[in-house]
Image 1 (tube, rainbow, N blue to C red):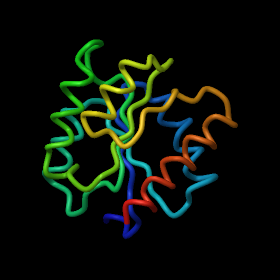
Image 2: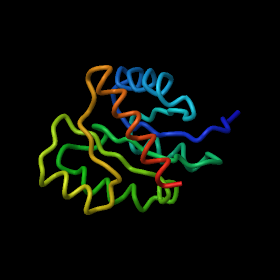
Image 3: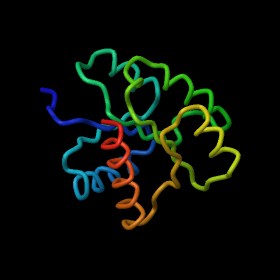
Image 4: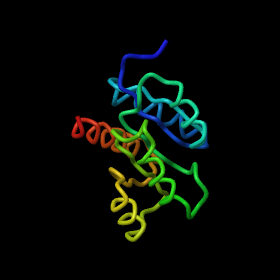
Length: 134
């Protein structure tokens, strides 16, 4: 049975990252569900079956390095993502890459959290973007 809560799609190939983010949403954004997809293809396949769309997508490491901008453009045009906030994660933020993501239509580009304080800040930032879009 699908939850009545708004939900966030985490696209990340690493299950440990999902568990970390899940802790963050359970701690600081209980009004949202977090759903994990280990690839873009897994998300697209699942979204075609679902009755609801995510209110946000957080993408980290699910596309080949160097192809992030092309995949961002693709995801922004996907029917299940047109109303979602799309947040890109990176280990570090290079200004040109950041500007490219933002110019293409990303909602935000954040440094991937590695500590609980960083996770809290990231989860709250995702929640803020969702609230601002409603």
